[in-house]
Length: 423
Image (cartoon, rainbow, N blue to C red; front, side, top):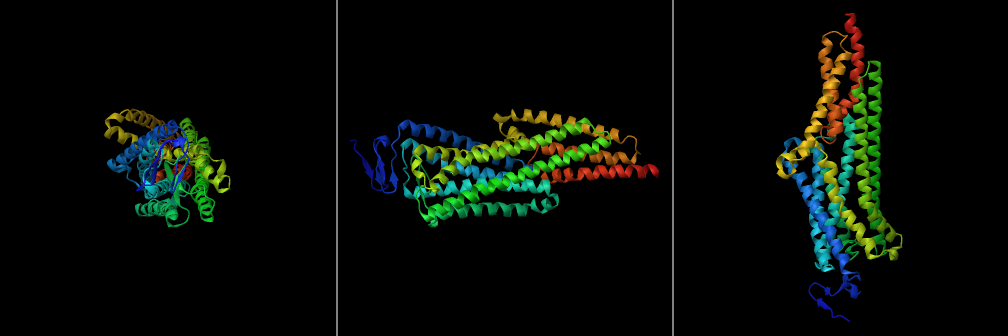
């Protein structure tokens, strides 16, 4: 039998994990091979590096470019902050523990680590929910969006996100469940394995109000946005057919629908893939089948959930044209991002020119006073398509308003033409 060394101050049992399975107060070593810990350490290192770097770049771009500091982008910035804190507080500790093949930071360290992971992880998920609601309002309810997108209200909503997340993460420290080591005993979370009324009730409520309910609301918001834009695009096509519509309107309409569909698909799928394995594991334990869960089945979902911090910068910021342009300008090694931005700008300019020309041709039979109105309308309409397709995060109020107002503008132009001819 190998000799064991016990640190009386920290309660840590030193030894080879695969040769022992002993209980020592707060800690319990798990019998697994060393290479398992090193493999987990490698993935955690990658997740931490990408998560910290990616979210730091988002925050840097936000502070460098004042044009990005709009109320809708405050939510994106808040998401980057929560993901950055999630990555920087979880990955280094997880990595070090994996190298030591056990928890080495004591009981207080475990509780602090788990509290930070819960707070920042829940904040990131509720941020996704807030972003979905924000886009839903500005696209489908443009009048309400005027108040919703004010800076003061946006800051209030962001504060509520953090308070809501704080309430859930403080609960285990106040006696509703507790924080303990999990999986390979190299990370900590709330106690979903012990079958007590407090633990079971906390697990059920947390899964419902932090995962399933937000997921349902996000799905509903994106479905309504997609249906609203598709309905408006069909109205545009009908109006265009009555007035010899241009092919560019059909093309941009299809691109708009497809762009929104892809964004909605990516957001929902990443949300589900990141957190559903962890939710399933906790619900299995909640249902009383925790005995079938081995250390691997509890550690892998935890790593996947922590990896959620690396996806959001790419989905919400890196594909954002203004963020890409700012990063290409401020960070020399990312100058290649500006090439894609220039190509998109050329494409948008060509689309604007084509649409403007087609609109002018439609109205060429009218009187000269019509030209100014047509030019203004065509410029506004083109601004919608470029915003929705290439810049879905910024200027949502202008995009939603113009999208809703397009039909009214065309109708007024049709009714005004005969009156001017008659006069």
